[in-house]
Image (tube, rainbow, N blue to C red; front, side):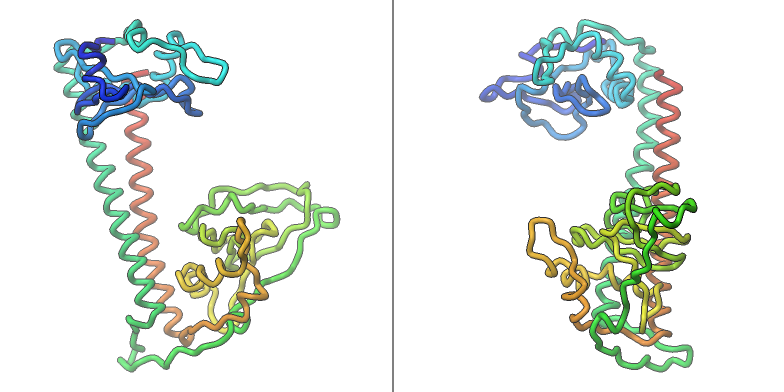
Length: 346
């Protein structure tokens, strides 16, 4: 591993801190789940200072190209394989290793010219991933702005004849939608069923992260049907929601909702609005807020007629689909990059 130490590890000490220049290699002496011996990264940002929990090294440009080393150590397997023989763990899981001793081992690397070409190729992939992520952020911001305008009625639609839709009605939430209360009792119903727990609902995305499937559930659950709307009542500010496309059961910490005067498609968006989340958060003053239906149901909310509901749900769904497509592109590109790194460096 061809790093030059020098300059008291890359810089003049500033009150026991090390100076990190752009292009320096930094070893972080903090255990992570995927990297129990710490991580090694290239500083691609501005110069700065770091504490003594970090070791900082210059790259010997005659022997190594910094970005190549960064890509090499971006693989957990490479980092762990290199550091495992060098690092000793203390009683408190701290790293027992001298900064100079980190350089004791070696890695196999091609010529500088090839290192540069390899790094340049991965930089192109990184640029594409960054651009996709930025595009996703912009779409998410656009979606948030559109939602605010739609539900504040700043933005209204017209019907097929070009006429204004009727004014929105105002009713208590218990008149707009309800909680379904059908239960699944594992002691009486032994058929296999998909069970969604609160941790299976992704924060703020409407994505399902997984589920438990079986016939030996250990407690009574709430039943839901294809097309119902699920809302996590524990810490409602996390915005855990879902509109499943299958029948199943869910935790008692999840409400199963269905529309009364609104469609479930529109309800799915209504529960994501800042106005509804604010109501849900005010339902409990505890350290672990839990939405209270008896309080929420008495609150008033404005909503449009069915035709305008459909238009609102449709335009927001179209934006969501675009966001999901971009997310898929990000995941595919990142997976492609990871596969190439593994084939090249492992």
